[in-house]
Image (cartoon, rainbow, N blue to C red; front, side, top):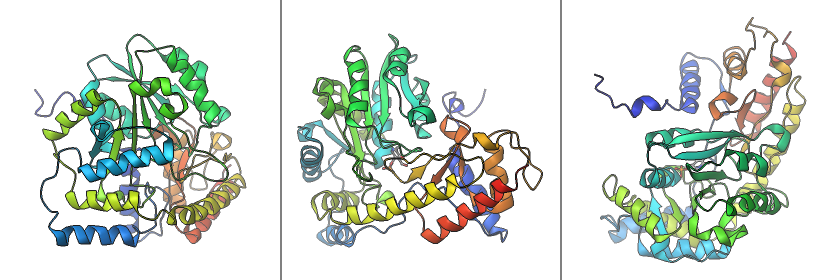
Length: 400
Ligand SMILES: Cc1ncc(COP(=O)(O)O)c(C=O)c1O
């Protein structure tokens, strides 16, 4: 009998980490590699947030806190939901964890029984399926392809729902595509969910503030108040406030669910770092004016990357509404052979050859459940992006 648990055998290691590791190895071997795999902003945490953390240390806020968050932070989260999303929550309906990741994991652990199904639109953030599997559930993938702007249609959602469906995971703007659902597109999905009262909604709003042009962010419980009692609205400070290393995520939803999540957290990690919680409080209540400034940079980079990728032979790159990713299709490259002699049979072969022959690290689409594509993160400098896209163009031009 294996020493390791049977549950562990159900999950795979993160493919995004595998790509980063390979890029690091090549760099260590002296190769000039540009990484387009980062899942975090390249901006620094704002100074007022850093100062709040230092002040918290100096005040001695270095002890255990309430398991699922400081009362002050929970109140600030309620105020944020009211201000940004028009949602009314009380502090008892709020949970704070070590990143958005822990929040989603706690919710799945707290609710899934063997055989329970979780609907996940594909392409998806790599952690959703494995978290569902770790919690004993069954991921059910529904394709949301390039032809619908990587957005799930109401018909596809309807067809995926069974009596065993427990959750529908919704992520807009999305990792890995950047696609954001308009209010009308989201309403069409919530109309379907209203016909299936046993299905709960886990809305992962991590990229809420990273939206461009006149796109208006909305979240399911806001668009359809009838779903309020069965929606967990998840968010965090990682992306909008450039705080990935601080590890603070949060969610609001029905009290019973929040209590069950607290029970899991109390027997696993207890409270997230007290210092990071005080920093997150400052992030949510302090000045927000750097968000549009950062977004202007992201939008400029998005437009540049989309233009440069569309100029590469065999690549089609739609313009996404938000996040800091694009998810181009390489359908026009499949079946060809690279300059280095690699047959491009799928997106994994494309990404591997691109890394080895041109020194550009991207994550292949199969890792996110939809091929043939790759993900580019444009959370890196303009120079890196320009040079990486030039190399991608050269790579594609040399395919025969
Ligand atoms: C869609 C999505 N949800 C959640 C997370 C988790 O964020 P955190 O770093 O706060 O755990 C990420 C991070 O990459 C993400 O892309």
